Amino acid sequence: MAHHKSAKKRIRRNAHRFEINHARISRIRTFVKKVEKAIASGDETAAKSAFAEAQPEMHRGVSKGVLHRNTVARKLSRLNARIKALGA
Image 1: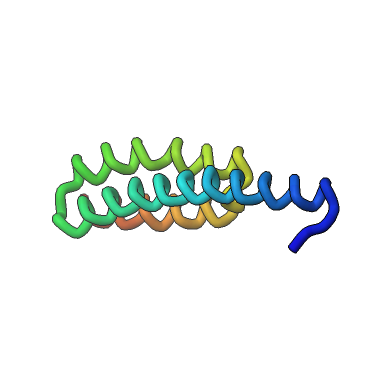
Image 2 (image 1 turned 180 degrees about the horizontal axis):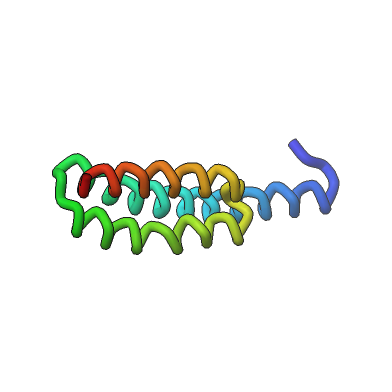
């Protein structure tokens, strides 16, 4: 257990940030799952609209420091490739 005032404050702050960051990651995962579900069903228009909704959420995760930019770029690229494969 922390004994210093600053360490106690840091514990409180970390707990608060964890909740915010965890909620943001959970929200991103939900949007990605919607895209994957649309891809699995084979509906290209639904997949494109779900992808358009997921893309800004994922970029917001990068700007807030929750996810690395290369991770998001890779995931978006792979999702987009799968959507394009539906049309082919």
